Amino acid sequence: MAKYCGADCRICRREGCKLFLKGERCTSSKCPFDKKNAATIPGQHGANQKRRPRLSGYGLQLREKQKVKKAYGLLEKQFKKYYIEAERQKGVTGETMLSLIERRLDNVVYRMGIGVSRAESRQIVNHGHILVNGKNVNIPSYSVKKGDVIAIKENSKELEMFKQLKGAKIVTPKWVEFDTESLTGKIIDLPQRDDIDMAIQEHLIIELYSR
Image (cartoon, one colour):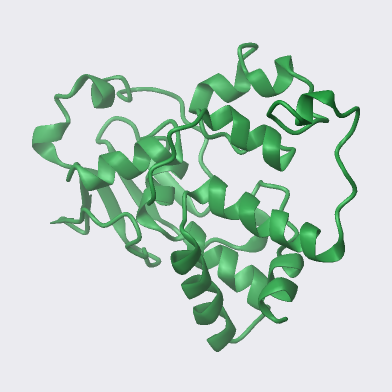
């Protein structure tokens, strides 16, 4: 992922919705998205506007794509690969594309509650703390399959960030489960469109790539 040096909360304001890039901070009263005028875009000129400018059809499609890319931390090349792969498979292309992205290992670690954000979950995977079916996997884009067992490496369990997970109450999507005592999770099923809680109009992204 390319390094972004700005404030994550500016991304949420730019896209006009919460992308939960800062974990728990996004749900607290400290969230800048709630404090500042979310109806305007960030920046010197955005602050002077009373409302967001009206977008063209192409503009709406582009912003929808950017929103999903920023939420999952993907580059354009990575994102387009998911679109191409989804187009090859049977079913609705937009829903298949989102399902493929959801199956990324860094997203699964986030969904299980191991990381408080996708960015932190990506670091956890990169640093070699995660096992998939007993094997060390440090590739964030690794695609999980139904039945895969995701666990925290034994010698990593003594780290403070993982100790805090012991006995914690974590709400997970229905397609994954995570035991906070053994620090082990499982992919119960592949993610469906209903399992993705973000407000995404995937048909706009497909229209953009179909131009």
